[in-house]
Image (cartoon, rainbow, N blue to C red; front, side, top):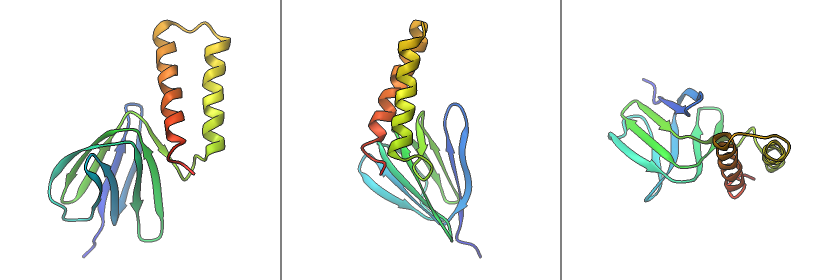
Amino acid sequence: MTNSFLVKIITPSQESLYEEVTLANLHGEEGVFGVMKGHSDLVANLTSGIITISQRDKTIKYYVDNGVANVTADKVEILSDFILNSSKNDKNSINQKIADFKNRLQNHQEGETKHALISSQIKKYQKSLNYIK
């Protein structure tokens, strides 16, 4: 009998994670909570912070800028419009992304909608710097 369950992390543009895991620690409105196989069903609002996904041999950390978690006994679906794998993104790479976005705004005539989207991304990356080492 296995004690793993499925975790899916989904953004509007992609599915960032689809893995069997043994533990997920999520940042809810009322604090951090852990999920293991067999957890009671719930829907929780997620706040900005690091979520930790543990497998038998490794741990993966993601920065989530708000979202929703749908938890069932054998699956957790995390929905957010901004997620960063903090194992693959350090402060230097995030600062480079911020600089690249700022250059796009300064060097190109973006439409009003595109400008707002890029500005929003800059703010989310800047906010992530408070959580990523």
